[in-house]
Image (cartoon, rainbow, N blue to C red; front, side, top):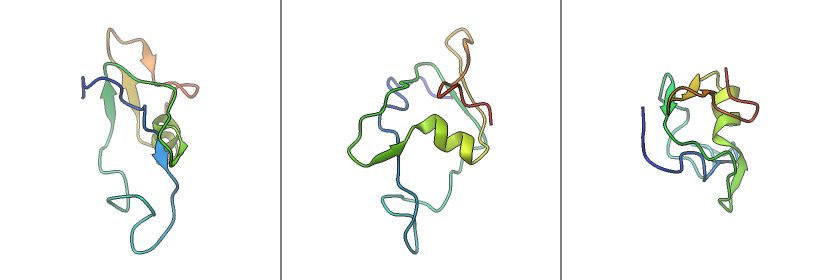
Length: 80
């Protein structure tokens, strides 16, 4: 769980490249799930190609917003 402000505002970079995906520090997501207190649905980083929610959903990583549990993350709200 994270309470750091503005989770999601960077988005996720393009996937691809060898030996690691381009602009990535690892070959995969290492968390089993994500709980955030404040999620930014709009991302604005120059090399973002998708939202954090879209990336987590694609990799089947569950994520929820927990500020009094408002439900799953957006991008029509994660739910992997």
